Length: 475
Image (cartoon, rainbow, N blue to C red; front, side, top):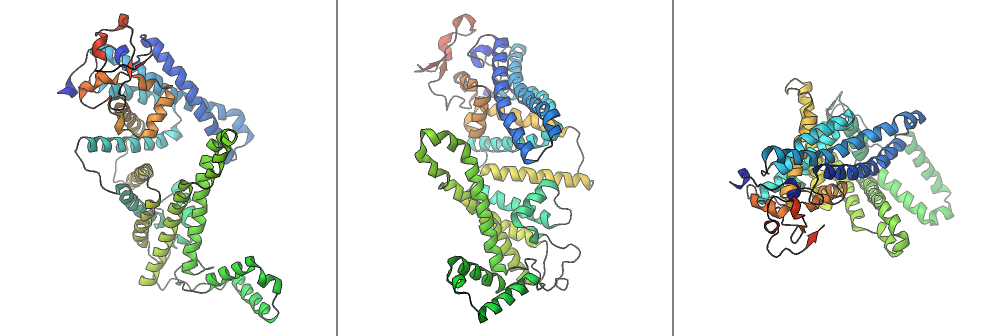
């Protein structure tokens, strides 16, 4: 079988084709990864410290060590990979289908994650597990093992959102960042009172003092109207919104006392649409600054971009559908039940049609599995495995490296670009035409890219390294 066969080429002929020395090649990768890693983590930690309003002591004593620790982790991941790449070749006398990718990346990733801060290992593990799962699925589709489901990412998001919203409404269902994030998105009005959830326990909406004052002010305005206020467009709009919010259907189990159910859903849509729009605009600010002097005509696209409206529509419709369904179920069943969140969350997941993203669906699903697993540990139903996060990170990263070497077409494009950036483009210089012998179409996206090797350091004739018609070389 091709997977069990071995090719006798040296690591220079397959991997570090830019330099015949294993030591120098490892130093090249390490130096490049060190520079890129520091450029990634320095602004990341600085911005995080500003947003968290860290005190002066943090900047003086902890900021730089944390940056250097994360930098060393990412640098080691890249430098140790090429080192184990060469070590395994010397041990086996050649390359098997698993040694160039999975075999070299597994020990390198395990050592590297041990250098990282413990507080970040879980987050990195979730990200890489999500990426590895997606990669395995793409591999299975390529081999015809599974058939992709149309709109599968939307269906996965619907199921994930359904369970997330159910745990959000359950007592002690979600904690920490997940609970705070959902509270910000759907609002605190959707957090039930766990002391009583029956219809008889639902209180009548209180007549707030603000509403009474507004009614009184409207009554006084009827007697002595203000012509300037009535004629203003802003005043008309405000009075219209007040009228819509005050009058209309509102179930006594609904906690949005200041407006009726229809206005409650509309306000939720407008609020989260604005948040999504602003988030997408902010993400485009760095690139916009680079183009403001060279191509100022592209600056308006920062505000009138299709992706901005797509993210806004996604978040806005998610909230409005969830709130609308929850209100409807209160009216139908005449009670406020946490089981409503299963239906409302699933229907709200349809909003992903506005902003389809396999990455978002897979990441949220991975976090959901993690949440359910830790709940199982707390209840004594699942066993606890010490250092499971480090092992899982190493295996997941090794799977992704295997794809990056043997079948890059099945790797997420954003992660492939990250690997190219981390290695200063050297990952693309591997002689993947030789690796085609393993039957994974390793060179499918590298047609015509044949490394120019020094025949003094090759173990196989140079002619056998180049595919027919391959006349483009990379030095």
